[in-house]
Image (cartoon, rainbow, N blue to C red; front, side, top):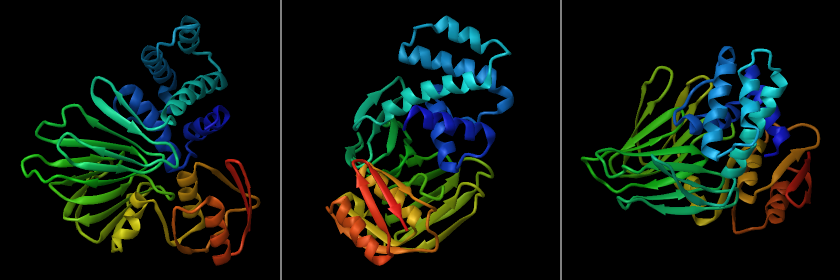
Length: 324
């Protein structure tokens, strides 16, 4: 993500017009700085900015012109454009760090792992549970995973979990809005999909799902073959029976679309091939794609999809232009 894009994203966030996915990006950045989630209140902008920048400066060893920056922030006459630029700069550094190839980073509390678009990773936890991490995803777990509760934080993207059964030590996966609690099972979670939904697909066993914010309801217990979709925007959720293999095929490098909208196709292709897709006019609606691909090139996939619902495309390095 370019610095100017982050600047625009921050403006949308503060204006209250950002999408749920964009809000999640900003809040994940701030949460990492503060080690806890929060919602930025525009009325608290100046003190929040000071605290954020002090923390970022400390954690990134940023010292150049530090006094001048803090002096500007504590001055009530600071221009909003300057503040946004500062946020964009530090957010840019954070996103750049997050977009490095998969890495094992540690701090005083967590081990964390990150993948870039197009990458996949398989992680084995100290309890022998296994996590498959999809591209463009971030996960972390406590260094105290050996304690009475095993807690995992899926901060971004998608992961499949094969959990070792330990009745006395529950396994909990936290996302920004939903907690998923299991004893021993396997399941797939997409923290925020293309529509701003939390999506859980259970492969084996059973899980219990609970809200983290809002009403903090227990949404129910879900067994093998069930899928829960939770809309972050309005807290509405529903479940359905699904072919779970479709939702975990990515572990085997298989790309699956089942009645997928153009928006869903766009997001999956961007995460899968590390590209940026742009539509020349408008994003087509009321169009669905059903197809399966294994180890195919981007050109082959686009060519096949264009035969299902006609469109033309141009590939220029990491940029794809689609005309419908």
